[in-house]
Length: 252
Length: 357
Ligand SMILES: Nc1ncnc2c1ncn2[C@@H]1O[C@H](COP(=O)(O)OP(=O)(O)OP(=O)(O)O)[C@@H](O)[C@H]1O
Ligand SMILES: [Mg+2]
Image (cartoon, rainbow over all chains, first blue to last red; front, side, top):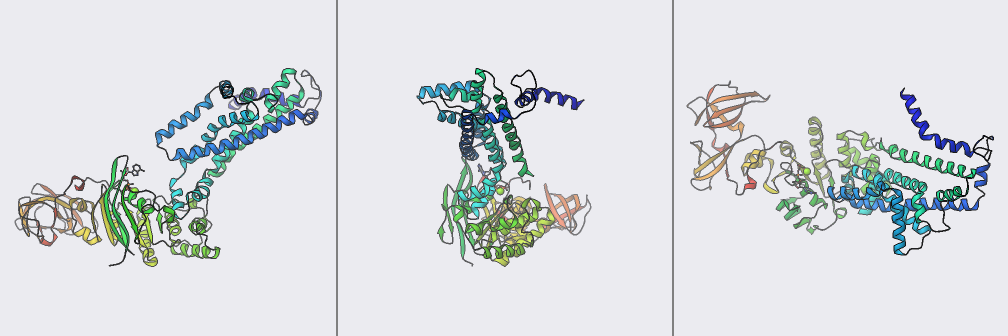
């Protein structure tokens, strides 16, 4: 009974994705009938210059924004560590609110902000937006690790002659590394995954995979888009597995 | 007298307007085993953290070997700390933990290896090089923490309740180990505890603290036998503390009876506090002592019997190897030399406070 219930849930959750994946291997160009298994959509995908450019943009954006957000988030967590409990809780609360905000609101706000500042839209504006919305996720994964951290190990390192940089990198950093990694991967995934905020902050001629799919699909659905979407899904899926796996590895 | 190693000069420290240390003065000599003893929250850890360089005093100076180190950062001080919760580095092996300080100082590898071997032998844990700290028992972790500190050959070792988390038997073993280590290494120890027995067993000098003030500094014997005030008397072991009046030199009135004593110089008809240790109260046949009373309570304690005696409106705590059943009429007598006279506390802070230790 329990198993049936869980299977049903999974069926509902994954049916749309599953359809997409199946169609991406469909040799027939129409959605209506199964024309046999093929990989040709995947091949033609990789011959498409515009899509390759979008892929490159997406990866670069994800890597850069995740990296920068991780550094900023880490520094924020270190700073919060020496604050009083109340101040820390307040700052955490403020940092978490943007995560709950509707993406469309965030996207439009970014657009308005950039317009009012007179910034030219392009890769830079997307990057800024992605860094910003990634920071809370990074803080969320590093902060709990940091809180568990035994502050006396840091002091013990100082006591043994290490300066504060050495104490941080040799003692504190290895201890919170799982949190940092999972924060980075989470941010990477969020950035990879994002459509709405990118849509509102991108300039003409700059596309990520998701905005590329959107424009293509509006012109008429091509099977290449199925395979592209399948690839994005697979990438995000694997990343999420990694995110959930990293912190556990070190805990025992 | 040995050379002075550390001088705390008028150290004051407060947190959020709450005064934790008030003009504390303390001198520590080379090779001394000094224990800071006092109830929870009296400022022991704070004193140690100021010595270790983890806190700055608001006022006062810390002088180490003739040099003012008040503002010297922790990593530049020639002393090491053994932390209350060990603070071993969890992602490093035992050997890496011990080597940490030496690696930071860029010592050659062969020197470090020798030191690790030597330190592990010293704390009776040879062969534990590759273990992880969290695979060790509390007592073993404690010894690794000590090994990690002493390989740096500090002049001074600070220990903050290092045995606090261990069970009684292990504590007693470790107490002897620590004394042995101290004698072998010739390092000065400053040891924090709120366990008076531990302090009496291990120390050369005990510093009794309460609410940021030093109450008394002395050898274990002098602290036990000649407490300077009611707080110290109460904190160090069981005792009978009574209000009394110093009639004149060598005569004190307690509960209406006049006792001969050996103290002088308290003035005439001055109110004082009187301490009488339970083992010093002599129970004699009614009429032969100075205060008449009745045994109201009796417990067998192994070495001796512990009794409570109602006499003169006071509940006396008495220890004796001679048992007297509850209800026995007795009379109380005390040898003059066993009566310890103390001035009444000058300030409220020195008043004996109820303790839960
Ligand atoms: N970082 C801090 N911030 C605020 N108050 C503090 C801080 N550290 C210590 N205190 C306060 O200072 C007082 C003395 O603390 P301290 O840790 O020195 O006591 P202690 O004698 O070591 O007690 P214990 O035996 O419980 O360890 C306490 O009232 C404590 O609450
Ligand atoms: Mg303490």
